[in-house]
Length: 134
Ligand SMILES: [Zn+2]
Ligand SMILES: [Zn+2]
Image (cartoon, rainbow, N blue to C red; front, side, top):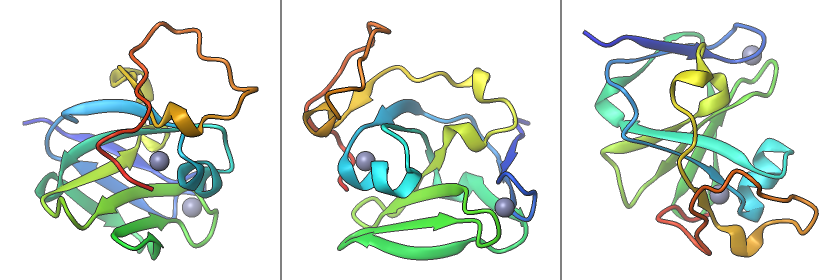
């Protein structure tokens, strides 16, 4: 059985994944930038049924009309992205994994909104938009 664990910076929120992510990327859209206070936000998609919070209770808010994000209410670490149009999936923030090296990004999304001073040099595919939105 696969068991992948992660959590926020302060340890108040911990989660477990029962299966490996089906994708991994970095989103450069304005919403992700503001949500993470960073030029890009690395994410990994998993089946919603495979995601379980094992400690604490993340705070959830609506960042776009159809998007719910969660974060740790104590330390502020962004934790998840949930698009209501795809209710059987959820993205976890790759850098909250205990082993982020295990699922490196394979693509860039929303580079049409990327900041000019963020230079991509890893050679990965870069898409103007993405399946994701806001
Ligand atoms: Zn925390
Ligand atoms: Zn985004």
